[in-house]
Image (cartoon, rainbow, N blue to C red; front, side, top):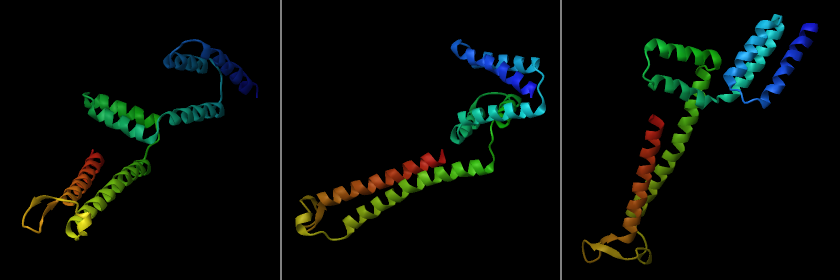
Amino acid sequence: MSTDKKIFEELDHFSGIEQQPLSIEDKLDELINLLNNSDINSNNIKQIKDKFNVAIEKKLSEPELLAEFQKVDSVDLSRFEKLEKIEMLLKSNYIDTKVAKSIKFKNFLEMIFPVLAGLVMVTLGFAMIILPAPPYFEMFTIFHFTLNDGFTLMDLISLIIVLTGIFIIIKSYIKFVN
């Protein structure tokens, strides 16, 4: 038990570090130096490692983590440097196919709802064009084809609704693909 007490006393030394304007790297170097100079057992090492890993995992959420992997792919580095960066990301973060699939599923749901809304708008717009409207709802005719028929303001509004629906569908699909 004395080693546990000694370790916690040495870790209390870090409480005063918060007032000093040191960078994270400096604090990490000091922690490594402290761990090298202390005599700790494997249980204490596991506790410290678990505590550190939990703190690091909270920093990167799943979408940010995948963005980091994509960033490594887009950077102009040699294959070996890219491999080192990916290895570092994999060592410091937990990611597997379940996490990747859950993110893809969330992205799919984010795409499917605008697509459905766009399809409803397209259907509504075509229904407004095809179905006959009462004469008082037709407003006025912009362009006459015959004496009794023509392109009305209601048809124009319907076409705007259709085009807006198509725009929403295309935009959400492009967002999903990228």
